[in-house]
Amino acid sequence: MPTKSLEDFRVGEQIETQGRTVDVGDISLFAGLTGDTYPLHTNEEYAKGTMFGTRIAHGPLTFSIAIGQVAQHGWYADAIVALLECRSLKALAPVKPGDTISVRATVRDVVTEKPKYGELHVEYDVINQREESVMKFDWIMLAHRRTEESR
View 1 (cartoon, rainbow, N blue to C red):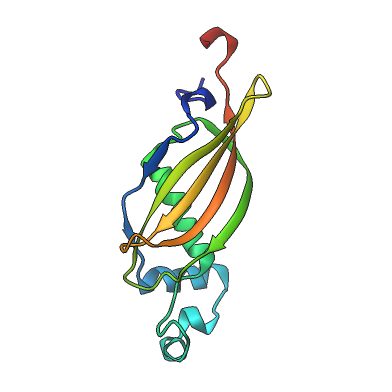
View 2: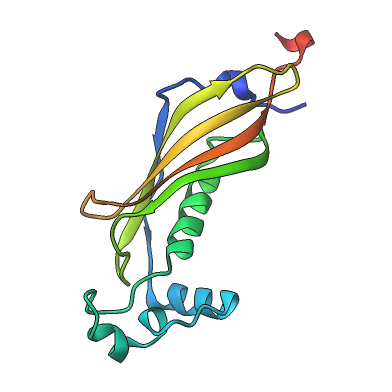
């Protein structure tokens, strides 16, 4: 039986994760893992000639780090069963080597239509050390409901 359930989350509830600094090694490892070796991520000389002036993190790397930061926070505990959907992902600013990112995660909706499981809708706002939003998305998860015996 889960120690935390959908009913433990409230619309408007928010957490902020600790920061994590993204470095060139993270970007290189992600390029190797995914095969996405686009020169903007892997070639400093090429990247110097772009509007960014340096290499930048892959968008999916920023997204993955954000998911991990909230998971490490422990906010969901064992309430989550599965991912249902990711909506409205927007990359708003580049993440460069040396940037430190954290996540403000806010409950946007708690759907309790079914007896065993419900939906937890959480907005992720990934921010850098200058408090700038670098990415936003909505993460929709299937979560355990409290059983009748425990209500």
